[in-house]
Length: 70
Image 1: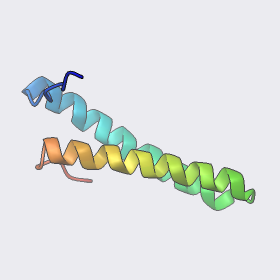
Image 2 (image 1 turned 30 degrees about the vertical axis):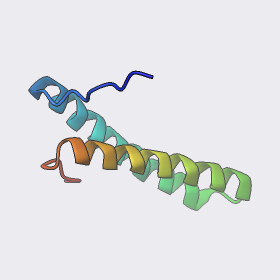
Image 3 (image 1 turned 180 degrees about the vertical axis):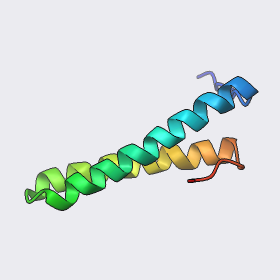
């Protein structure tokens, strides 16, 4: 299996910053949806989606340590 080297160019950083911010907004939206949801299956699904997005945010922060949640 080939291991893909991560692109840390300036262009890649700008795209990742945009994606990072969209993840932050999406997570906030899902948390609001989760508060209103009563079905435990759906709540669990929403939590798993949030966990996956948080992992992606961590990956981006590792690539570009100067990216913040602001």
